Length: 220
Image (tube, rainbow, N blue to C red; front, side, top):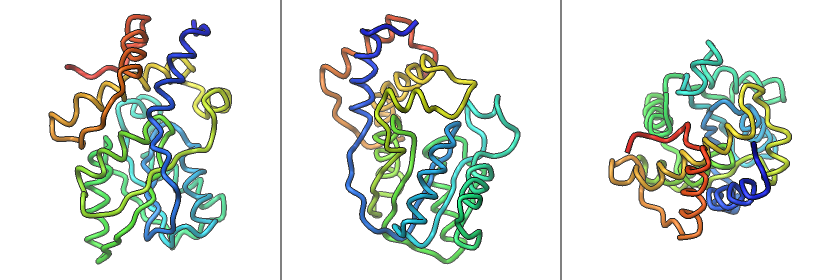
């Protein structure tokens, strides 16, 4: 069960995972889909506010969602955007990718097929996936400008409003732990650019792993 110490450690990881980019107008809003439909709402909100003229959703079924849904993540997220008032003709859907690297690669391929070569992207992700998404995008498509954002919630608020009932707050913390491990492992595997990890953040990671938040670790 989550206690005050676990919350403190999780907050440290949460803060690190945020890149705190300042929004600017872009050519494309690219929503990296997942099990968290609040990300779809954030992407749609940004489009409706006029931050970019094109809204893209990228995501098939990933490690977590393939056990939850049969519909590709991108199709579900796009439907949410349309229900919020985004015109369907301003939406592109990439629904085959199964991880963050494929999100970016398959998006790049789809845009090329459409004869589009945008220069600037606003990438929308879960709050605790901001840094990994940035590092992955810069590896796969380094010549483009990318700004990363997410649902604008504090950690406690995010946990209380979390949209997927199949995942508990402890599950979310375990996923955050796994994402931090990947930030350290994946540059050597060619999946991301390196990101510095402060000592206190890594110490929080190690303590959370020892506390049992290790269900989403990658094979070292």
